[in-house]
Length: 71
Image (cartoon, rainbow, N blue to C red; front, side, top):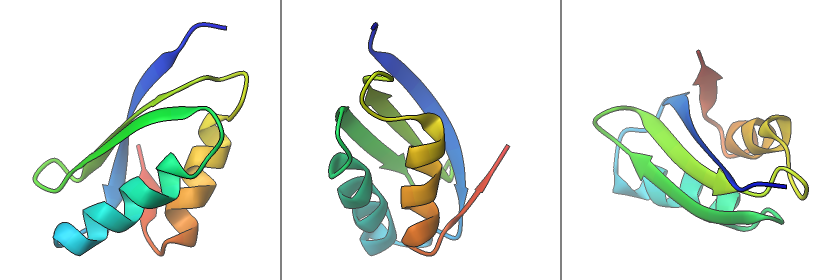
């Protein structure tokens, strides 16, 4: 499958520690190549292989860190 890049809005990130926690959780998922959180935009851009992980899995990992995903 083709590599997918997706921007996901994340509510609750307020500092560099928050963005680092989200990025670390996402990079631990199978198939995730890159995760770059943006504090100003309150979002994270994830580059991943949809054959190895899903959008739902990415959202679950963010929520397990204590943050809320919104559209």
